[in-house]
Every structure is written in structure tokens, then in C-alpha cells.
Length: 316
Length: 292
View 1 (cartoon, rainbow over the protein chains, first blue to last red):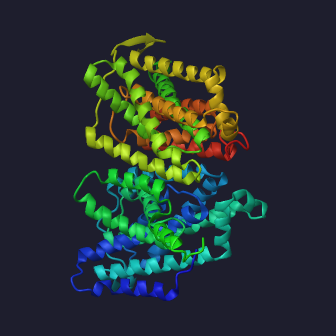
View 2 (view 1 turned 60 degrees about the horizontal axis):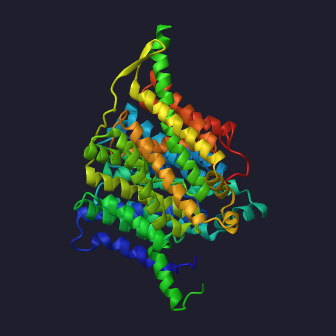
């Protein structure tokens, strides 16, 4: 958990902010970059659970999808303020996450993965078959949202800056969490739950806290998706989507925060390139996941760490 | 009375039939979880592979009965190879890796099958098409066979675990694999054989259910979610609990579908699980301190 220097982070964000000004960057590229950064930010939020707390959530797609539907419902009814959308998403996702995290953390270990999955599948079934929310078509053809009256988030550049702002916000929150006392307790729980309990920590409350933060960040990510895509469909919350978040975390390296951002972006670009060429890309993705678990459980960033370790620059 | 015989009774029997097959699936899942600490996300894909292996054998030989014998064997072998190649190296790691690994395996199996056989729905015809008069109604012979076959297999498993040395060794391994290793039992072999057996059971359930449902690459996904609910409801690691919960879910599902559309049924089943978890947080037969 070495702290990356602030100037380096600032540099990365400055470079990202400069992307729309690079000559030759098209509308398509910007929207692809939007997806990549959004996926990266969500993978980072999930890393709080998987990497730091040791809980695998197979239900993050539900937080994501609920956030998206919250925005879509407001936009559809003519409430265009992005702030209203985000606030509404926080409320909706927060209420749902409260119920899920209570049940899922009541028992230890594998229960968490199974219950988050089953809860998410019920939410998916509900939206998929409820005509009020458009059934399997979802809510389509949404208007552009606005930052304040008159300033619309309509161009790809503005949408790109929206996701960049979200990524920055999510990064600040995650960073704060993992460097705080709260974050250290989460790691303690991951390492040895019994010991953490005997030290007097209310383990379930900490797990619920981690789950809530991760869910709310993911819900916010979902809330900005319809602003880019102008739709929300039940496909956003199907459980393979949760699997893709996990894959992103694994590719990047769990417990690193930065890794999952890179993993998520990498995964999005890979999916965009590969799925247009071959239809067996899920076969490749599955195989990549197996290989990563078997041979490089610390992910891409972990690989770099290993190299540094060999050179003796990093204390083990 | 007419309603009872014409509607309620057949639906109840449907539920028992489905519950028995679900029990075969959930049992393998529970045993593997108890033994290896891995919640096998690829279990539904082994179920699906069973149906496709059956499809292949039937295509080659034309015999459903041969397929019923060969498909579990084939899938059992696939499971054994999978266990040795992928799960064995990661037993010493945290359980989350097993979860993620088997999720990857599920993707590989599902998409592999889609590439080999295509994504369309297929059917396996029941080996005997007739019906039998039963309690004043006509009930399909094949479903009765399905119920009987599942019941026989479940009974055989129960006898295996209670009456044979091998069964006692597996139960001992669930309790404390390290101690068993110290007593001179080849625990690795126990792991591999049990994984293969659970794969074969899933395949058997897949092929048995195939003539009642349809065969397609996603078929395992829907079943595995139900199987997870069954395992949680029954109590993690409790063999009897899994079977009991499988029958409860099977019957509930088919009775609910009399009054609700399928989506509401899915949500109602889920409601049952939540209520049970509130009243009995460890499931119906889960015991404190077991597998926690």
C-alpha cells in the first residue's frame, strides 16, 4: 500500500483531461474512453471489497443498473439536472445496498458472493419483466442532462469530462478509505476475521460500511451512464456484468486501486476490439481469468511489483 | 375435487420430479463446498455439459440409456482433469480465488459448447413417450422414471456416505482434511474423485432433465442460481438439508406457477429464502460452527 505521489496522480489526470484536445481524437474515441474510464472507476470501487476487505461481490451489476435506472427515470420525466439524477441514484442504490449488505455480511465467507448474486438476479428479473420500466427494452431515447439550466452535457467532450470528474471523485474517496483507520480495519478483517473480532471490532458493521461505500460509488457510475448512452436497459444488471467487473479487478491486480482502473480500461478496449472481430471472446476472457488466477494472482500491477521486488528496490 | 386431481396433483408431482433432479445438482455443490471450500460456479456448466454429452452419445448411438451411462462418465472425467489442472494448485490460497477461477471456467465451458454445438435450443426426446393413469389422472411415464431414478441415486448416495468406508473417508475429509492426511489417507485423490463424482452427478441431472426442458448453452446458469438458493436454504454443507431444500424449492416453484407468471415465481422463491434466513440465519439444517 505504498502511496503514489500526488504529483504523479495530478499528472495522469492532467494528461487524461488533455485527451479531447489531441488532434485526430474522434467522437468514437471519446465515447470509448468514457466507457473505459467508467469501467475502470467501477472496478476500483469493487476493489475496496475484493482486494481490501476480501469479499467477492457477484452483484455489483445491480448497483450499477439501479443507478442507471434512477437517472433514466428522472430524465424521462424531464428532470434534467445531473445533480438531481446523482442524488436520486444515491438514495435508490443506498436503500437497496443497505438491505443487501445487511444480509450478505451476516454470515462469513462464501455467503457474501452468493447472496449478492441472488439479490442482483432478483433486481434484474424485476426490471426485465416490469413494463413500467420498459421491460426488456429498458428506457430509451433519453434527453441530455444539464449541469445547471442551460448548460447541457451534450457533446462527447462534455460527457468525457463528466466521467473524468467521476473517476477523480471516486479515486479520492477510495484513497481516503484505504489510508484511513477504517481501511486498515478492513484489511485486518481480510487477513484474519477472528482476530479482528477479538480485538473488539464490530466486523459486520465494518463489512457493511465497505459494501455501502463500494455500492454507492458503483451506483454513481451507473447514474452517469445514461447521460452518455441515452438509455438504460436490464442488460446493465445481468450477472455476467458483475463478472466483468470482477475480471477487471483481477486483471489489474486486487488491493491496488490503480490496478483495477487500468484493468477496467484494458478490458473495455479489449472487448471493443475483440468482440467486433470474433464471437468467441468470452471464451478468451474466461481463459484469461483462469490463467490470471493460476499464474499471476496479483494481476498486471502485481507483476510490476514482482519485478521491483527481484531488483530489491521494494521491501517485501 | 376436480381442481385437486386435474391441476394441483400433477403440479405437485412436477414439483417433486424437479426437486429430485435439483437435489442431485445441489448435493454435488454442497459436498464440494464442504470438502474443498470452493463454491463451484462451474457446477451449472457441468450440468449443461451432461445434457450436451448425452446429445452427442444419442446422436452417435441412438440410445438414451447408453447416454445416461456415458454422459456422467465423460463429464466426470472432464471434472477430474479440471480439478487436477486448475483447482489443485490453489487450495492453499484464500477462497475468493476458487470462486473467481470457477467463474472463469464456467465462461470457458459455456462458450466452448456454444462454439461446438451452436447456441440454438435443442431437444432430447424422452425414451418412452407414454402416460400412466395415476390417482385419477394421466401422468407422463418419463417423469415418473425421472422421479424414481433420482430417488434411487439419492438413496445410493445416502448409503454411500453412511455405509461404506469410502463414504466415511469423504465425510472425514469434510471435517478435517489435514488430520485425515496425517492418518495416511491420500487426500488429494479423495478431492479429485469427489470432484469428478459431483461433476458426474450434475451431468446425470442435466441429462435426466433434458427431455423435460430444452438444451442450450445457458441452461446451467439458471439452474445454478436455484442450486445456490437450495444450498443456502438447506444450510451450507448439510447434505440432508440440501435434499430437503431441493424438494421444498421444486414443489414451491411448481405450485406458485399455478398462480403467478414465471418472473413472480422467481421473486417468490427468493422471498422464501430471505424469510428462512431471517428466522434461521444458518439455513434449515446448518449447524453453528460448521463451515464458518
